[in-house]
Image (cartoon, rainbow, N blue to C red; front, side, top):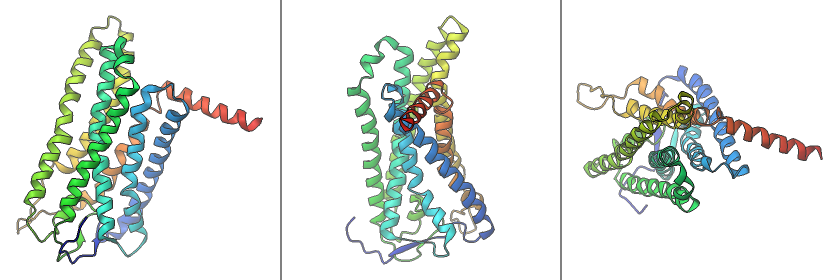
Amino acid sequence: MGKTNQSVTEFVLSGLSSYPELEAVHFALVLYMYLVILLGNGVIIVISVCDSHLRMYFFLSNLSFLDICYTSSSVPLFLSSFLTSKKTISFSGCAVQMFLSFAMGATECVLLSMMVFDHYVAICNPLRYPIIMRKASYVPMAAGSWIAGSINSALQTSLAMWLPFCGDNDINHLTCEILAVLKLACADISINVISMVVVTMIFLVAPVLPIFVSYVLIISTILRIPSAEGRRKTFSTCSAHLAVVIIFYGTILFMYAKPKAKDSSGADKVQVTDKIISPFYVVVTPMLNPLIYSLRNKDVKAAVKSILCRKCSSEGM
């Protein structure tokens, strides 16, 4: 970042400090969900590495790694804040946490649209799938998702942290959430707001269109399958992705699209319920992804058994 005129060297994450009776419950629940995320998504990554013939799990392993990175960028921060009375974070630490969270969120938006294209080709053009979705295609698609999310996050984080912070340093949130940080700036944030709107259109709204069109074509193809069993099996291959998309965008809409209450001075009032729900917004989708998408899949179960049998055999020798 460069030098700024800001006098704030650290931020205070107030979070639930006014409600100590809730902190113990939150700590236990969030810690449990975080461990489930590490275990479930870790299993997916191990399977994709050990069973390279499961090419269809390339994007899923990227999603699992992304979910681990996304939750690890914020969950340890507010877990540690529950254990100590000092709820501060350095200016640079706040910038790093903001960058990682923003980058992982934007990357997931793009990656989900890449995954639906994979399903579209597999169902609507199965004979051409090995040609279209070869390594020279799906690796750049995944890499492009990561690069796009990282560049966007670097831009947004730089714009936010370049602002002068010369007064209040109390972030009314559990992490360095960009909107909460922008409220503390003692300068005009209109450029930041405009850039956030543009980014929202690009990374949230734009991917919805190809996802919607792809599923219209997928469903129309499935409906043309003559047997009910064939339709059921074909739809089961993409139903998990559809559920993940609904949960992902549903949680975003719930957190950010609902109307905000206003106090007498007209400033936004951060409700207690928002603070209570915000940690679960971070962990609920990454926790459900492996459960919905893969751990109930027969191929994955067979791969897990194969890996365990191989390990037992090697230890027995």
